[in-house]
Image 1 (cartoon, helix red, strand yellow):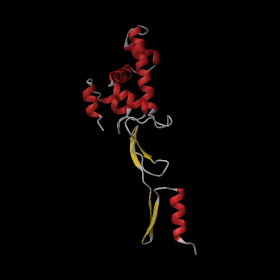
Image 2 (cartoon, one colour):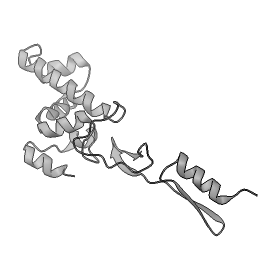
Image 3 (cartoon, rainbow, N blue to C red):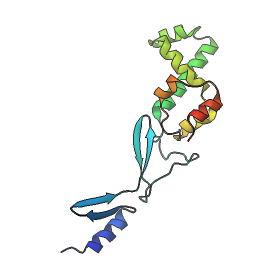
Image 4 (cartoon, one colour):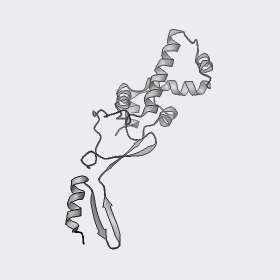
Amino acid sequence: MVDVSEIQEEQARRYPGLHVRRDGEAVVVHIPASFRRRDGRQTIIIGEDGRPITPEPTAKPKDDRRVNRQLVEAIAKVHRWQEQLESGQYPSVDDLAQSLKVDRSYVSRLLQLTSLAPDLVEAILRGDEPDGLSLAKLRKNLPVRWDEQRKMWSR
């Protein structure tokens, strides 16, 4: 028969923070983790030591998998579009939309992202955007005033 204490010690060594126990006929596994909503999906965040990670506002992601690529690419795209409009490369939003082979309303809705508060843009680029922030939500009702944006997406 296997010594249960040996198994528990092995688990503690290999998987810090992991706890397994019996509850009658059931086996209960406790894994400490944080949940974070990114791009409309729940993400489970577990640290290297098995402890939950609480993302810090100034923390930079270890790799770009934690960055919301869809948001980052949309922000880059709309700033390029805005530059093309301001330079006269495209005289109007209609001309830009036609060259992109997309609907004018799509371009207009996305161009609203150019008025996103600078600190929110920086947070998105760091991969530290507020929970629940997504491109779909930003396209719908983005307030023009930065203080209202911050209030809407406060942590």
